[in-house]
Amino acid sequence: MGSARQLLLAAVAAIGALTAASAAQAAGGELYFYNWSNYYPPELLKKFEAETGIKVTLDVYDSNETLLAKLQAGAAGYDVVVPSDYMVAMMIKQNLLQEIDASQMADFKNVGAPHDKPWYDPERKYSAPYMWGTTGFSYDTAKVEGGKVDDSWWSIFNPDGPFKGKLGMMNDPVEVYKAAAMYLGINFCTENSEDAGKIFKLLEAQKPSVSLYNSDGTIERMIAGEVAAHMQWNGAAHRTKEGRPTVAYVYPKEGINFWNDNFAVPVGAKNVENAKIFIDWMMKPENIAIATNFTGYNNAIKGSPEFMDPKLRDDPAVNTPQEMLSRLNPNQNCSQPAVDLRERVWTRLKS
Image 1 (cartoon, rainbow, N blue to C red):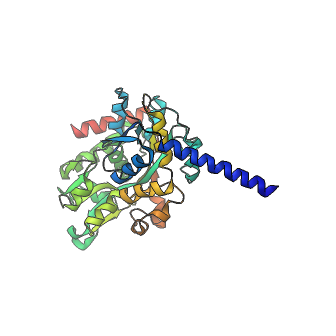
Image 2 (tube, one colour):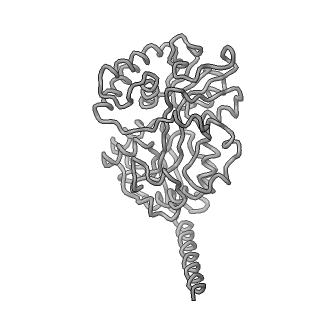
Image 3 (tube, helix red, strand yellow):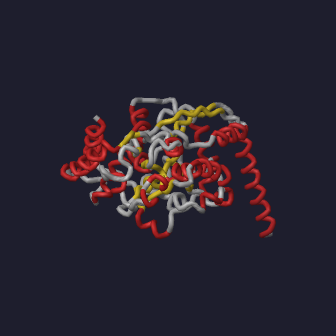
């Protein structure tokens, strides 16, 4: 009796899986995908289109703030966006994201802890995980005396440091401000104007040494030797080393930003069901592994390592060494006064 019941349940599950697969195959229609630049493999989009019949149009941005401004301005043309952790919390608060109940999707079972219940969306009502990583800096060991610099943010904030005039920084107020705050031992979410003033003075002193602020093209810029060091995401550092093996990635001893990027569906999306199909499809181990192999970042999906490039597991930039884990500083959602201070510092710095 028990075995007959098990067979029946297995048959029902198989029919359900086939039905879901058939629905995806027959989905058709369109999907407008708004993502960070150079952050999704073209071949994976083709695979999704072939398996679902859904035609994807990809548009790109260079920062969370660009994404936020676009949605705040009323852009209603996107079905899937990729905000980072703190930005998910901000967008939920501003009613810019709609509930998709990702935790109820068929493949959410593949999401590993702690990504299944993150602080910014603990019930995963509004988001599903994409990539996660860190933001440190990379440098070309062949271009510094002795082949090594101190594992400190001071190596790039020092106005007379080893990378003077040959340094690239991100064009990202959160990343740059937080790095400066960590170096100075100041709470990233400070509401104290004196603290913010110290951060500004550090960044202002560094500015003449910075050849450019740009979050795009960090890989190509480093490989081409246009700069000797660059504030960089760890996945970009991995891909940089593939083109310039003398590049090293640094986990600064004062702390390094630890972030999570997520799939979400903005309010006003026109192809919501296709968006949900795409997000669920990306929680399959074999699919997310293709994205990891391309981006060089870790993902949150159990079972994906068996499909991943072994070089990722062997690179400390991607696979954080045990002794460096204590340096990871998670993102957090700051108060509005703290955000206002940060924005004033950034606006003044860039003026």
